[in-house]
Length: 121
Image (cartoon, rainbow, N blue to C red; front, top):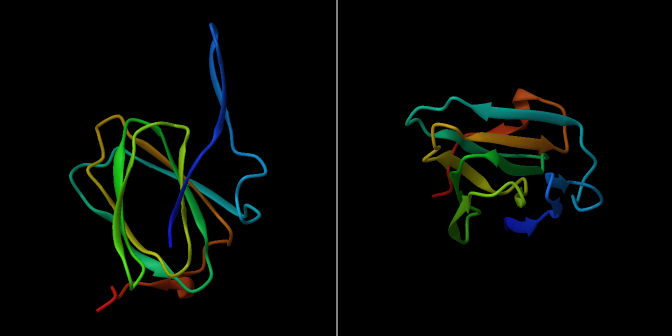
C-alpha cells in the first residue's frame, strides 16, 4: 500500500532546503524526473521488484494507485510530500500542471522485465 511521507524541510529568510535522507525504505539505484507533460496519463504499471519514491518538486500532479485491494488518489503539490510506491502498487500519474516536475527515485536499475502493465481486475 502506498505511503505518503513528509520530508524534513529547513526554511529561513533565504529559502527552503528539503532533505531526502534516511527516510526511504530502500537504497537509491535510479533517479529520473518527468516534466513538460501535456494532458497525458503517465505510468500505468506496477513492478515485480522496484519500490519508488515520488516528489513533485515544482507544480503539482495526482498519482492514482490500485494495489488490488484499495484504490487511492494522492495530490503531490508540495516538494516536501513524498509518495512511496511499492512493487504491488499499480499507479498512474495525471493532471500535471504546466510547471510540474515529478522527481522519482527507485530501488532498482531500469529493467523492462520488471514492469507489469496489466491493471488489477
